[in-house]
Length: 209
Image 1 (cartoon, rainbow, N blue to C red):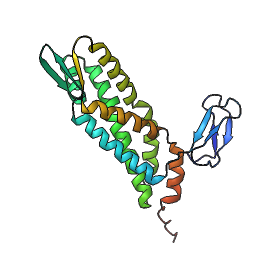
Image 2 (cartoon, rainbow, N blue to C red):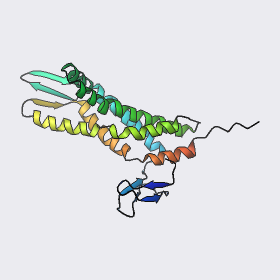
Image 3 (spheres, one colour):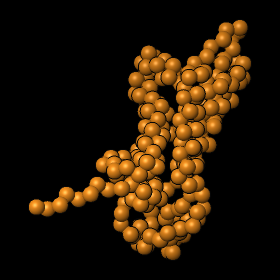
Image 4 (cartoon, rainbow, N blue to C red):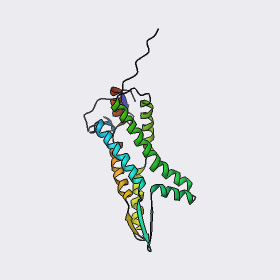
């Protein structure tokens, strides 16, 4: 991530990386694909955004997503309860897939990003900064909260003809979390790397005898 050159993700053309103004993006001169971008948000704004996303994540997983009323019977479940139900019904592979993509990976993503931002803010020597940033970049494609939200909306539309559907607190929290994650994922990690390189002090080299 320290190379001054950046390859176009569409046509592989090489470009020299340059500093951007806030809110702008660099495009490939050959195919016009987006190479990298710089967010409007500074470090404090990013820290507040990630903290809000973690709190929203906790609310989304502590309350029922939806209440279903069928023939006078009320049934409600959280996301974790739905995963457990899938497991108990013998759909272990689906339960594991839902758990890692909608519960585990988004939590690790937000937690790792929060740690990185706190390390930069403190400006202390941190050997874990580079490995954690590379881990975060590799993890991001596996988070699928937005796909989960789309599945919920489609399911609610189908169930509305068979039962009375009452949206729960978690449904609104997941909607808010989807928006927050979209903003967070739009932030280029290369910018975080550049800010960290300037903010985090490296340990002094040991003098040779």
